[in-house]
Image 1 (cartoon, one colour):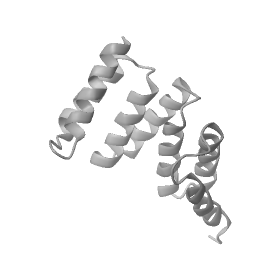
Image 2 (cartoon, one colour):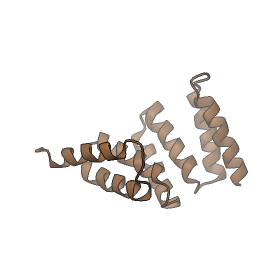
Image 3 (spheres, one colour):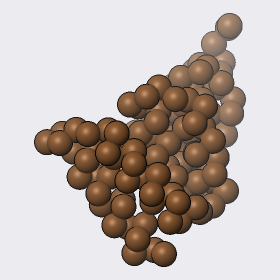
Length: 127
């Protein structure tokens, strides 16, 4: 149910705030949001971000970003998050493709153009 997903997302935001900073509670709320809405792209992306940032679980984050992209091909956020994860792993070609898709959906993504230039320079750099 959409309302249930949104309620869990709001709780996750509260637990993620710098005032509380309770990542385990935020993770629980996000997992409940994904359980309530298994194809809710924002919930999947937020859980992926939390796993990546708080627990350094790149594999878990990658799977969630991919699910989010499949769930809502019109949402640039999971594409951006996935592009950043790929770039951190030096998978520049795939990262560039994900970022290009995101920028096609929303050309005004904050930092998108500079990230694209960085990826382009990495792709062309001798390795």
